[in-house]
Length: 125
View 1 (cartoon, rainbow, N blue to C red):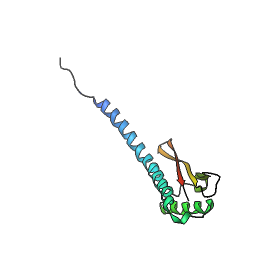
View 2 (view 1 turned 90 degrees about the vertical axis):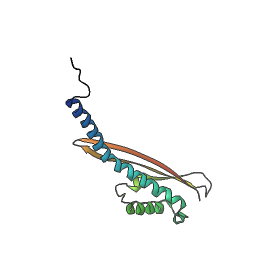
View 3 (view 1 turned 45 degrees about the horizontal axis):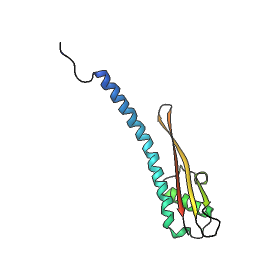
View 4 (view 1 turned 45 degrees about the vertical axis):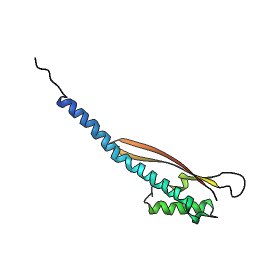
């Protein structure tokens, strides 16, 4: 008797199908993560920007909105996803910018994904 070694054609088709599904999923989800990293860098660069000195939270949101548009992040609603929190009671103690949003997208057919992102940036005057 001769024993067969290796995988059969059916098992190769199954393996290739799983790899294909994961590859298509990754191609749909990766841009969502790239957008988050770009949005996070916009928030982080505000720390060193002198343009936010003495600005109100609505003026800072307008500045963030403009920078999001420059980075093609139009799908992130700044009014819903960006919030401010004071670090302390004393004036000039700084504040925290919180960015919370979710991104949804279609993978294949009626299969969708949801990614939830959160980032906090601490600002000192």
